[in-house]
Amino acid sequence: GAGVSQTPSNKVTEKGKYVELRCDPISGHTALYWYRQSLGQGPEFLIYFQGTGAADDSGLPNDRFFAVRPEGSVSTLKIQRTERGDSAVYLCASSAGTGAEAFFGQGTRLTVV
Amino acid sequence: QQQVKQSPQSLIVQKGGISIINCAYENTAFDYFPWYQQFPGKGPALLIAIRPDVSEKKEGRFTISFNKSAKQFSLHIMDSQPGDSATYFCAARASGSARQLTFGSGTQLTVLP
Image (cartoon, rainbow over all chains, first blue to last red; front, side, top):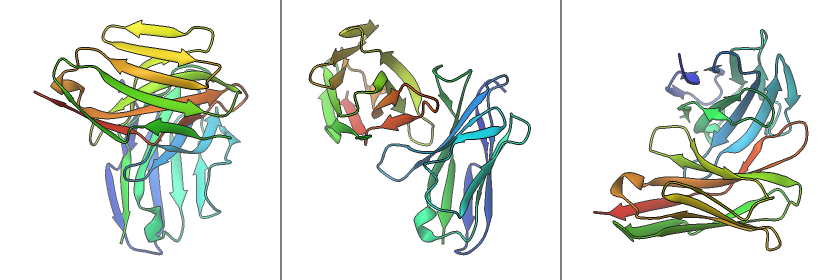
């Protein structure tokens, strides 16, 4: 596709469950970012990949959150033992390189009940 | 040090009027200042961006004014249209290896017909 694709669009899960959120970046984009957007707030940085490696994971709130990008393209954000406070829209963005314009996906709305 | 403060939280403008949104930052390492537009259910989309070596950038009806000494920048939307009704986020990015965006809290703009 032409843009950043995120699946699923919506995810409802029970407290304590494990979830995976997927991001397909724009083809050829080496940089990939995950952000979290709570209701009425701006996106907050979670983690940044350059290629396959996590270059900066300083935004991950705790060790329940983990992300991978094994082949330098698709990325998966994994959340263990979900809590109600994890409910938010999780946004993925990609860019052609550090410093290039970032393009955002439509986000995955996660609701923990 | 990493915050970007945005105001107002919400703004109502008549069609044809000027919409003005303001942001302020503290981190002098920021060297790129984009504005994003977000419609409900969509990811943020880049609207216009500026670097601190210029004081103003105009693209169509959208203008960024940048005051480096005051560490402030603003978005002006001229001849505002109902289709401009959306949430606007200012952001900033520092030089360095990660290059993630730090977002303001957003301004919900409503343009009345």
